[in-house]
Length: 316
Image 1 (cartoon, helix red, strand yellow):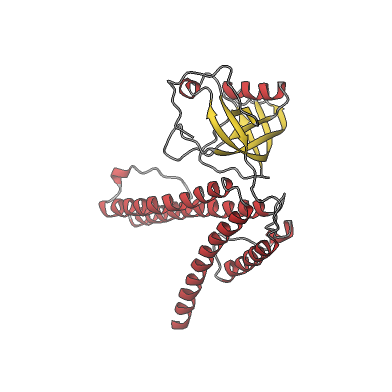
Image 2: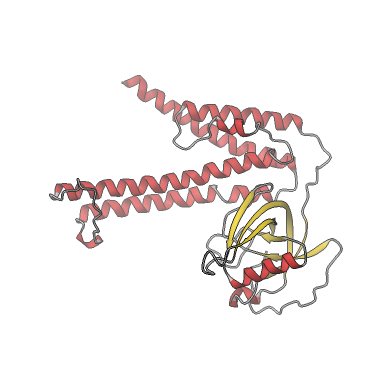
């Protein structure tokens, strides 16, 4: 989609081509929402309270959620998820009106956003965005890809075993198959479930790396305090100003943050763009091939890790 232009004239009565439909749009950050997934939202902004009232009143119960381009405010992906409102709870009394609704949704389909109708409200937040959409469906719905699907399923199972073998700190567990059989077929609990599992894995790696960084910094500061004669045995919390820390420790903390900053960008990108790429593909066969490439990259990474591990074990 073009970047939001708050100077654009609002289309009050848009002309629609055959198959086009006007829907509300609710940007929810750079997360990519996948088909057949479920999500709960807490609604507090007046404009989105109004949006929910509208979709309940007109009976549509749905709205568009695009991926927001990271670091590019007002730019959204043109192929987006459609949230369907399954359940809404009014909680304003319990939350002193801090939250109006707690809403449960299912992503029921994908649409292509043709154009936005009221960019102006993106600037003043006076209301919610409305967009013209068209259905976005696969071009190979009638084709059979059993061989491709079976091959991907087998590789996914083998990958779970490989992650366990190298003792990956963040990995899939055997419970993945207990919840539902590994399937790359179309439909619920099929291909998109595998993609959702993969997305969760990568997001967990980002969190794990952040925790590692904080633990490393805390360990360094704890040693500095203990070496300075501070008794930390009572478990009390101490606050340190950055200026009170010795230059060598400050330099090391800065180095760690800079190194992590570079890693974080790479980790975050890997948890965003491949999934948007999958969402905007209109071919199940292409998605199977592309997801296979992602699995291949993980296989190579794990194989290299296993080789290094074997080398170190042989020298002991």
